[in-house]
Length: 384
Image 1 (cartoon, rainbow, N blue to C red):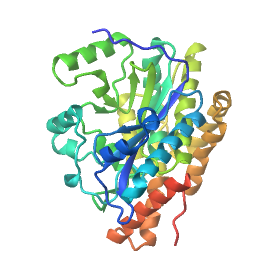
Image 2 (cartoon, one colour):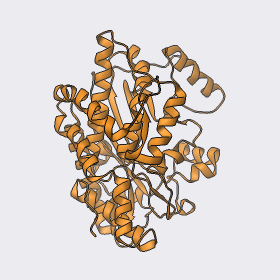
Image 3 (cartoon, rainbow, N blue to C red):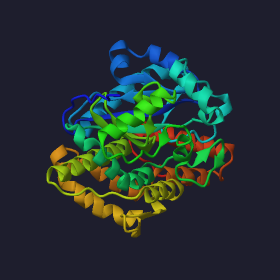
């Protein structure tokens, strides 16, 4: 099989943000996605708002942009249009990796054949996908760069997983994980960490094998945490949990944008890209999902380890000149704000603790705090 690769501008960027539709009074999930999208003005709906797997979800997307800031402006336009539609319905938007107390058995799948196929094939794992994520696309001008950069990005995956972790609760329980979404989503047959292919022909053989055996109907059904997106000419980073506000989303988008451009520049200079054995990559993903920003991660193929928050400042220093070139220095600095005020999973637990623990009232307060952060556009500290 020939897997065609589209032309794209180097380091162009696009963002996608999956958001839950919640009742404005109770915080429960509302199955009104199709009605919301139908109510959004045509000029916005066709560009910035899309349906998603579950009827309790909408996705806002950006156009292909030069900077992360421009992409965020697109998302804000989509959010504003969705809010105009949801207000009369007593529905609001919530951003997180999971809904804290909704039960998967009560959720309905959007009426689309590809989504019905997921549920039919994956059964209980498919029906448990009450999960929400952020996806970032970065343009790669040369197909030969794509797979080396994908493999190298796996070294940095735990930073993105930990900083975005926003799913400590699932089905009304504290799971003990910072990102329960990471554990749930990887149960789908073609989700999780990518294979570390070294040649495009290997990716084509893999895709052909899956098509011939009926595993997928097209390449977009390969739902890796980091994947090539040949139809766009991009690398798509999908590992991040859903975020509750645009400051964090911009910070994560800038981190992805800078990482990809940094690795692309190393290739141009003939420098080797950092890589890591698959067993270290798998362990790092688990550690970041379990412990979040308290994770001790494996840094390199030699097995050196460090607390992620101690390693992060060095990474940001390395990327700062790249951010200046890409016009996202202010957005990248938002990563420091996440570490100062705590990642979303930490803020959610603080809200629950301030409301007596993890009972129904506490988790309703968590949902309210996530909704408030979306409106504020930034993280908010839990009130005592």
